[in-house]
Image 1 (cartoon, rainbow over the protein chains, first blue to last red):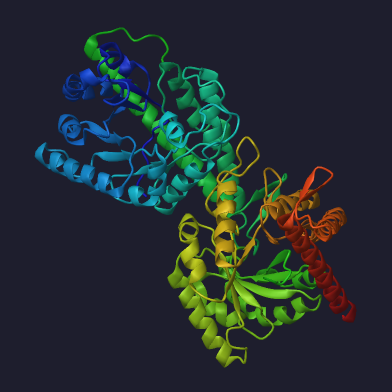
Image 2: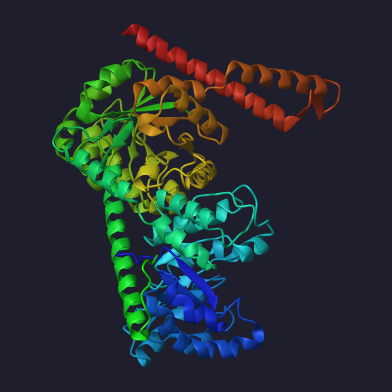
Length: 320
Length: 305
């Protein structure tokens, strides 16, 4: 598996709302998802498509990656309008079959060639939001090498399709989420999943909740975030980044594990904690992830400084 | 299906062959001679040399003996293990039907060469990776030798970590999936429902008992363990207890009394009594009797030592 992208936080926003797009670079996001789908009214779809090309460089000014969510039923028109240099990923909602993904791949491949984009640059986000999609999960996830992360299987569309309630105190999507995650893992893709945390409110702007969820997800080994409200960006960045204590602990684990070499023991218990090759692998993972997060944060800081300088805007004393 | 009673599968690393004597007295239904998980790479050749003698020792307390082998080192591992007295092998990290076919072929060859009844050696498939679990049904169909499926150490190998609820991420799904596939294939699902924090190597007797009891509730019949102190709680947790047996007896009595009156559906307290409930109670009593018989058998074997 190639080095994973750092995608701890991101905002999905209607590309037709000018002020969201203009200010997106100030939010500290790892990615911005420009929406053509549910947040764009039907009569504005054509207009919205025409905005993507210029919006891509605008939302990237703070170092975020630019994605676009297209409409399930307007694949050709949407792709023609959005596959431009600077786009990292096309999010495809309600994916239900491998054929759909192969079609996307064909069109994107052609557009990359025609528009001078390095072949294979644009990823496909195959979003599973229906029972049919769950049933075809493995085929969908393996339909194109452009699918690099996979998972999900919850949310409003899924809950409507299955006829289950949205905000309940238990895991109502256990089977579908399990299917998608198993497919992602079997194919060696980045897993988009999260531990179960009961949510009975449905708030999209609760910063404490976002931090708690991101932290629980990080402790479970997951790394992918995203949301709708700027209030959750910083908590997600923080919650998905290993803390200094975790980094120090990972180094300690690796030292203890190195000491096992040649002893004939493959594991040891220290202070009620098992140190073995699995703990060591996890520790290496944590260190690698912490380094990637730090690198990503530097990239974003540099981009923000450059943009502020270009705008001759004074840099505030602190920034997130 | 009257499968052997295999509630506790005690793993003994063959790099620590001295542990085999204590293991043979632990009351384990099965002793697993490990060449994979707990043996350092450099110790593997020496570990293989010890298997044949360990098989004999392990039998002393009445345990069945399996060996745990590495699909990447099949020739060496199976040659070291396939001796008379061995019941079967657990193949770690199985991922494809082709690997099963390879194990099957090697075992058939060794059976001929070493005077073991043809087809006698069993295979337990340890599905410890996502690929293995994804292919579970095909793997289970790949050889008639396959008698069991287990997730083994999938939580560690797949790096599945505890959730805030205490469940290990994805394990409730993987366990139910494995049990469903195993039953569809007519083979035994092996495992227990471990929860954080005390699981695996760190689980004390109580944690282990509850893991077994929860595991039995969702269809497991026995579990692997690494510590001799985990054997008794597994045996106990996977055996129907006296209260369960008494309730089953009462239900069957009530059902028969109903049938004698010409009533197939009745109530006992607030419980429904019908043919399905009676059949389930009978199965529980059969299982309890088989567990008791297995315990007597082990006691006799141990007594002869």
